[in-house]
Picture (spheres, rainbow, N blue to C red):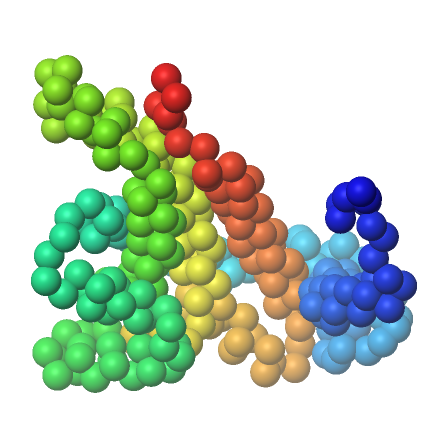
Length: 271
C-alpha cells in the first residue's frame, strides 16, 4: 500500500501554495529593497539605484537609538512579568480543580482574543480613571496583558502533558517543593517557558495599537516608524529600521518553534 507521505501534491495545489507564500512575503522583501534605494522621498519601482549609505545614516540617528532602547526595555520587563504570572496561572489551572477554573482560563486568554484597540481603550480609560500618568510603566502594563497569554498557553499545554506521578514520586522520595520544582517540573516546562518568553518578547517589541493608547508622549520603535513614514525625506531610514525589526522578531519566533516542536516528549517519562 502506498504511503500518503510519498504522494506528490497536485500541480494546482503547488501553484496555490506558492502564490500564497508570495503574497505574504513579497511585501517584506520590498522593505529590504527600499532600505538600500537611492531615492529618499518616494517609493519608486524599480529603485533608481542602490546604496548602503542609509545604514550609516540610521546608525547615527539618536532618535532611532532612543526608540529602540525603550522598546527593548518594555519588551524585557513585560516578558519577565508574563513569565511569572503566566506560569503561576498555568500551574493553578492545570494542577488543581476549583470552582470557576474554566472561567478564569477564559479571562486569562481574553486580552489576546480581543481587538487591540479594545484593550488599548480599556487600559487608557482605567489609567485615566485612576489618575495614573502615562509613563514607561503604563506601556509595560499594557504589553503584559497580552504577553501573559502567550506564556500561559505554552505553559498550560506543557503542564497537562507532564505526569503528576513524577511530582508525587519526587515528594515521596523526600524532595521539598523547591527541589521538586527545580529537578522535576522545570526540566519539563523549561523549553515551553523559553518559547513563550521569546514569543512574548517579539509581540511586545513590535506592538503598536495598545502602545498608542498607553504611551503618552513616549515613542517606542514601532510608533517612531509610523511617524517617520509621513516625513518627506530620508524614508529609507524607516525601511532600514523595519528591516532590523523583522530580523529581531523573526529570530525569537524561529527559536520558539524549534524549542516546542518536540514538546510531546516529557522529561522523566519511561525512566
